[in-house]
Length: 139
Image 1 (tube, rainbow, N blue to C red):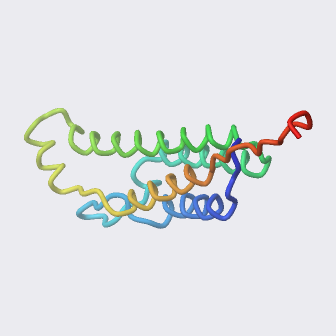
Image 2 (tube, rainbow, N blue to C red; image 1 turned 135 degrees about the vertical axis):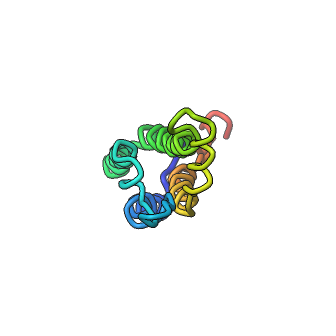
């Protein structure tokens, strides 16, 4: 049996909702710091759609669906990080230009906060052993 620790879930939802909008994810030389929306709009919208599913499962009190959504959300955050990393390092397909681009564009600390929010969402579900009731025949 699983239970949902609501304070942890609310903290994780709060962190995961604010990180893509207000924290820097990429440092671009001329334009400055970019949040997730400026880095890739599709990645931003899918991230918020998956977070919305987590919030929906939280308010409907469906623990199994919430666990599934948080695992998918963590996987999506990991996949998004890997995709942005490879996009920076292989944008043009030419080794010289890609090397210069990867040296000028840097990943920022917003990714760590996004992963922290996703991990808090994941650990907000706790497995509890069911209470064993002694049968009347044993007494």
